[in-house]
Structures are given as structure tokens and as C-alpha cells.
Image (tube, rainbow, N blue to C red):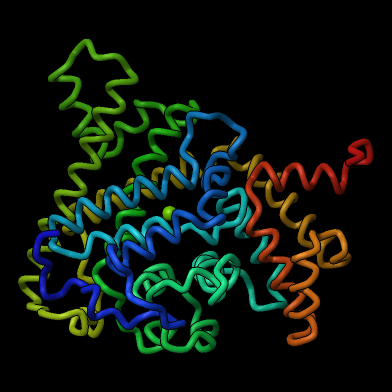
Length: 383
Ligand code: MG
């Protein structure tokens, strides 16, 4: 790896793991984190979880797995250009969605609603729970025992109330300090990935039209460029050429604006990055505005499309029904969840019981949640 900048996180300066382990023999600490994430069962389940479109709607759409890989790709490329730690960025990117419920935002909202009396449900916090506690496969420790820096990046947002119970990892939400540049970068890469692929998936689903998208400066400029250069291009190729140019434009802007900002502010260490009042990874003002319009457009034209809304409504019903039935009768859950429910109920009462049910429901894939709903509520389904 090329020499890293003084404000990059270095392997040897990591704040370490919660449970001490021997040093890796032939990998860096962050490569080990990445490898553990890839081998986790929560990571495999991302294949059947979605953000906007439900998994069974078609094989052509992004899933949370392909989304996470796209985020990692963007993060790594940008990290390399900025001389940041590529492997840490990659580990955070691959883990950032591990705590997501089935059915994207609709599922998350429904579960948060069910958990209202019990401290709520936040998907970022759930991702941390997955890597800290819920993955259960190592003899020496619970979870994946990741480094502090990867865990810090995974916990992108957190309420003050929850932050108070998290110790050192929650501290930055209380004193409003910043995470590492690698964590900031994984976050922005996530945004670049989903804004652009939602356009692609939205067009493919027939929920967005090219003419509508041409109202957006970020799309229109690149569209005109492609059409001028390749007048006879097929629609499929054209869309891809436009989207790759949009991504490239955003990435280039992010690299140059961030380089300029880092230079201007003059940070020289990770400690200074953490203490700085604002995030340092970011677009230029012009690109920030273009992105704002893009998000606004997607909210108006895609996320509130009646077909998306109809599916979200159904998804919320499934999540809510599953939560309620397991909470009322935990014996309907598999034995290992019953066991941890018993333990948590003894220690924390109803709140502990609800948390285990939320863990179980959140861990489900879209298709498993639908099948489980059928098994529990459809009288003609007899297995
Ligand atoms: Mg994401």
C-alpha cells in the first residue's frame, strides 16, 4: 500500500479490539475486520434484503449486498486517491448495512414503532449490535470482535440517549466530535452509491422517466453529453453511460474539494480530524446543491411512487405482525432465540424480551419474513 497521509488511520495506532487477540500474521488489522465481516451470516443475508424494491420484485435490482459492494468500491477508490486507509474504509462500507431490517426503510420504521416503548430501533445501532454481539461463531468472544475504528464507522448515527449507554464508542455523539476520515468517507460513498443506483433501478422499474430526470442538472448535463457524442446509442447503454459519468463527476468533485479542505484546515493527525467541528470529507457547494436536488427528486418521484408505497405498507404490516406475535408468544421463535429471550427477560424484563424479538425480526431477509408471515398467519399453510 502507498504511504498514507498523516491524518489517515494507521493499523498500528488502532485503539484495538474489545477482547485482546494475537496480531494477525499476514494481514492488517482492518483486513482481518473485513474478512470477518465477509464471513458473517448477517453479510450473506444482505443478498436477500432490499432498500427501495422488495427482493422478489426482480433479479435486476440492487440488493443490500450489491449495494454494500458498490459502496466499498467507491470508498476504496476515493480512499486511495486521498491517501487514506483503504482497508478500513472497505471494512466499514461492507458492514454499514448489516443491521438493516427486511424491506428497507419501511421495515425499519415499522420495527422502530413496535419498539417505541422499549428504547426504539435504530439500524446503525443494530449494525453495531450485529458485529458486537449477535454474530455467534467465535469460541473466544461474542460477535466479530472488530477494531474500535471499524465499529466507530459502523455507528454512523446514534441518539444521545443510546450513546450514553455505549461507553467510548458513543462518546462522539455526546461531545459532538467527528469520526475518522475513513468513516466519513464510507458515509459519503453510501450516499453516492444509493442516489445513483436508485436512478438506475427506478428507470428499470419504469417508475422514473428520462424526461423527468432531465429536469435535474446533475442528470441533464451528462445526458446531453452522452447524446451528443453517441447519437445512436441504445437506451440501456445511454443510461449506464450517464450514470457512470454522474458518479465520476461526484467522485472527482469529492476528491478535489476534500483535498482542498484538508489543506486549508491543515489537520495533521487523526486526533485533529476527530476534534474538528465539522466533517472534512465533502463535496463542493455546487455539487452539494446538485445532490440536494437529486435527493429531493428521488423522494418526490421514486420513494413516494404508489407502487413503492403499496409495497412499503404491506411490508410494515408483515414486520409489525411478526413482532407482535413473537412478543406475545416467544415459543413461536426458534430455540436459540427463546434461550436468549429467557436470559434477557430475566436480566432486563419486558425491555429485554422486546429487544430479542427485534433482533430476530431485524435479522430476517425479505423473503424469509414473507414466508414466516405465511407460516404463522395463513391457515392453509401447514408446515
Ligand atoms: Mg447503505
